[in-house]
Image (cartoon, rainbow, N blue to C red; front, side):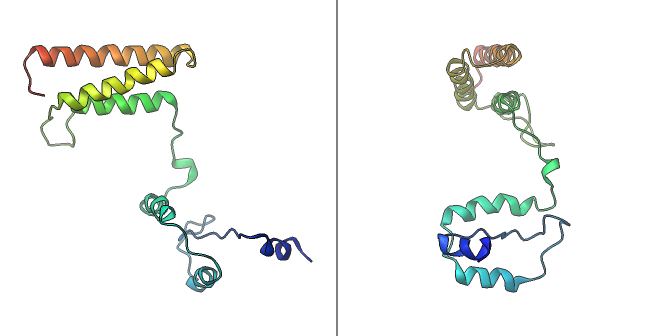
Length: 151
């Protein structure tokens, strides 16, 4: 008895359900394989559908196109959100920047919480970057509050 035949009685089976082949990136032409596999397996929970949705829009990307997420890039993303809320960056090109001081304050508080919770676990560069980002955002926030911008 082969390993494949033994594995079928074990309780689950792994099936590649991607719409595009990983080798060539071309759409799969055989829908019959997927429909046959669907009849043998239990339906996926609703959670699986939400995980597949983002991948559908990025079907032409390969694994090498994706950028690795680091702590530094995460912090920069959060700081960009705060800058959007402070009105320093427009939401999209051609639009005027909008100020939402409440959202900016919340994002600054999130960054401060991350600083506190990661204390002692960051390398010197990450720690310095987080400190500088927080200082810059706090100074911008205070400046806007002093100017009397509405929250």
